[in-house]
Length: 116
Length: 107
Image 1 (cartoon, one colour):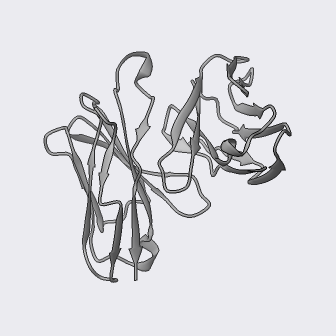
Image 2: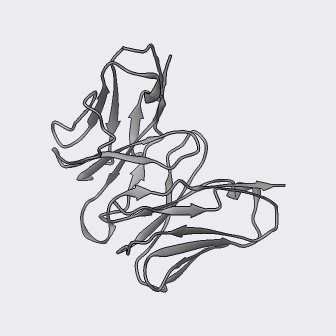
């Protein structure tokens, strides 16, 4: 396994368009997390899944954002009607969710979104 | 939500110098994690500290968890340009990160 994969690495879109990002976690990892990171800041938690169940959503996650993990494997994050303030790096992480290593998160390289 | 404050926000030093960065909170954590992030990449886990007063060493990096499990420090000895990056702490309980310390080590 090569780790957490995110696609695309970069996305440029015009304001008002919808975008969708994909995250493939490490195989057999039960937990999957989405974060947003802006320049000079640490990652801000958006949401996380335990298998296919979305267990927590941040108040930062407006109604324009939706995340899914339909089969408990890969996940998608969709942003509808993008705004310039959505420009950021979107990071995905996964963890085993079990045992001593349950909270050790492995991050993907992120998707950098630029909204023009 | 447990707020994590990191200091300093920026640090620029010469190769060979020692440095310490801090992660503080008013809340108690069951464990804290330290990550390093390089430009254009995701954070990479360096260490997890679990026990109050715990000290962990990773080559030239020394991590300490406060006795009360509210704070942590990272000390780097004889910094090298390869140590340059954003150092982040995170509470393992709620997956929240501090804003990070951006370290630049000049050759």
